[in-house]
Image (tube, rainbow, N blue to C red; front, side, top):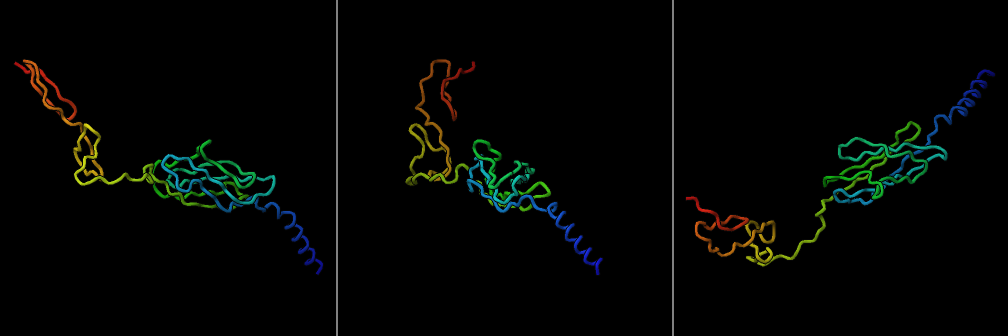
Length: 187
C-alpha cells in the first residue's frame, strides 16, 4: 500500500515538474486582412490575433494562397501582430482572383492557424461605364473615325484622312493608315 502511494505521489510530482515543459507558449486564433478586396499590386496588411505567454514568442509563417512559397514574417511577442501594408509591402498579388491566405506557427511551442479569403480585383473593376452613345454615333475624338468595333463596346479609332494633296512634278500621292504624302516616282 505504501508503494502505491509513493508511486502516485511521485507521478503527481513528476507531472507538476515536467508539465510546464509541455505548456503552449502561444496560440493563433484568427486573422484580418486589409483591404479584404485589394486591387492588383495593392499592398495588403495582415493582423494575426491570438494569445501568448508573457516573455515567450511565436514564429509566424505566412502562406499567400497563390502557389508561391511560405514566408516567415516575424516573431510575435504579443497579439495582435500586424505585418505588411504600404510602409512595408510584404506581398501584393499580380493577378485578379480569389486567394486563401493562411498564417500558422513555425515553432513547436505555439499552436493554431487561421485563414482568410481575399478577392483581388483588376484595376479596372469598379470603374463606372460612361454613358451609352446613340446608334451610329462616332465615339472617337474630333479628327478621328471609328475603324472597328462597337461604339458602346470595344473599338479603335484612326485619324481621318485629309483630302488628297497636290504633289509636285516627279512625285505621286500616297496614303496609309498613319500618313499621307508625296513620294518620288521611279523613272
